[in-house]
Image (cartoon, rainbow over all chains, first blue to last red; front, top):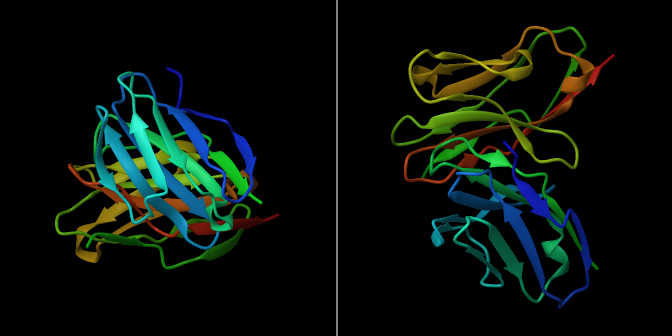
Length: 112
Length: 112
């Protein structure tokens, strides 16, 4: 069974731009969660989608948004990028909330 | 509020020595518990999980963890550490209907 895939793996953007990251979950997994990981803040939960509905959202500004498609693939979007948005963005899929999550390799975003 | 703590930010052990990484949780009900490992620049890999039943859980790469309800702990152990075990280790808690809560991580260094 293929694992969680994330594209692109690396991105370099400048302040004020926007970016879209993509995540394809493991086949059969309907829950997709997104995390931001930085050296100073660790792993921070962004949001979770299940069957195209956002079920939970972390404490991030509205510039961070996401969606999930009918095939469970998910995208997250960050608008008006700031330097502090530079991070590793991780996507994880699971069968449902509370179950083990399987992580993708992440997208490394650098904002200049 | 649910929380997961890992008291040790950084641990250094010699190759071949035993290892114990600490994890404590604070939940209203006993959560599902997980240990993940992350190599530099990579996603998180699931080492083991505890849902219920036997309190000693075996995982991959020779790791095990013991759930102790009385101490609200779920410590990770390995009898003999290999140089390739050097990585960041995350403890996480989850529950049905709730999102994962990750600890801050413990960085493991292995001396030759």
